[in-house]
Length: 620
Image 1: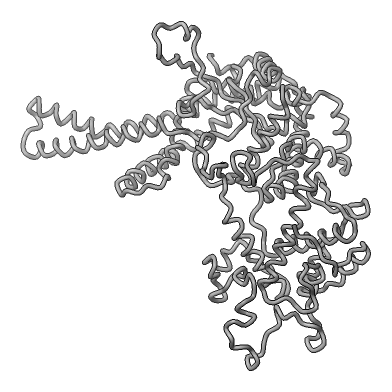
Image 2: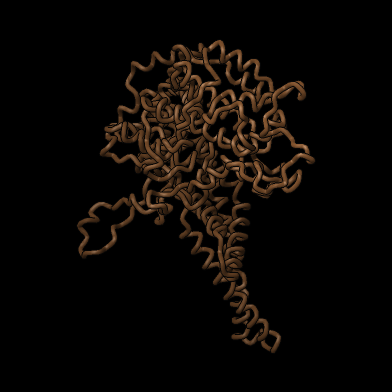
């Protein structure tokens, strides 16, 4: 059998593909029913059987309905055929830049007796798949038939030949896996080109992708009422057809996957079992690297340019710490799969930039406020700058809460933060902070130019209309992503609310996904939509923000007064090296200050580390 072999999974996939095509056929049959009825009425009039005023009126009514339905059907079919299917953002790998990789994939396809993928692309994710990019809207690459260049006449378009799907490989696999492991992992993926070449399966996939793209077209905002009505009808029809063929399409894809797995069993089966362990390990290291290491850099306007090389360091560190990962580092003596690339550094940089754009929403290219950073410069360019930026924001918000206490100097100090968040045990004896001390209405100043009116940055604290509604955002307490169920003491809750408002204001002021010229780039990789497409983490809560800012303040004090240095931990991200060792057990002490207003554990930790909280720190 052509292109489908004898696998039971492929036979099941073809039967499901025929079911999807039958849904399309039924839809077309329903669309031509009014036209068929009109043909019957006209034939009856021609033969003299269906005559009379009633039949004439029926012929006019059915004829008008048939024309409208046929026009609508033609329009919907045109949109389904021409709508641009979604395409995964990837980094294309040309054959000239990776001849060994293309040679390995072609040899693998030859062993599996399936068509070789038409191209190879990389994605910043731990996954691999085949993607059909033969739709005309995707443009190049276009494969031309043999002798197309010899056709007479200038300006003639080359003859399009059906192309095999594109093989998309997760970039972390290339850097962490060995060559044999990568071949074993992608063998079932490459084997999927066989069922994909079956005409019925290919036609069913094109139909489903067209309906999905039609839904995206229908969801595009329109201004005119006529356009909105047309899009509503278009979306309703597309959803109806998708609902009718959804189950068949899902079973078809399962059958294709089963057929590919069955065909690939004869190639590196034993090695594939070992390689699957590396897939899980790579996924864990990649996720940790993005959330703990890359995300702080992206927030500072820096994007690590060697993320794939970093995942090797992260997994090596994991194997050193975790006894479950022992033995994995012994593989590092074998040839890594990234050696199949001619210039792995440039490919790593391109995938790192794409990861920043997908997971954080960064600009499409480097610019003044969006620059690459290497791992050697990470502690200075990212860790130290992040700490000092957070410390500066913390003091700026604290200044907005009221005038500075007289016992604190104008320079920023950690002692001021500790005193502000300390919960007094006896208000009659404990010193109070004028920023939070309530004033007696009888002695309160009536001058509108008093301290409350001239407090610098007072607008940083979000005002509340009532107990449930935020005047600055219009969100209720249940909808506010920064709202915390248990913010701690009253003072920490007020400071956390100010930090949340300030961080939200700064994030809204920075345009996402703009180019250096300030304009959004053309949507060549994905159809419009808000960036990031795949956010790594939900917005931080108010308590998390306050904890991060106080921790940054402590780290700044340690660097400026105790000789500590910022460092990078491959698994935990920014870290503090104190006396040559990584500082530990800091977060529980900060939480004790925030939640209970007790600075004792943190002061003891500072004293043991030789950090002087009363000394000024550098914010910039």
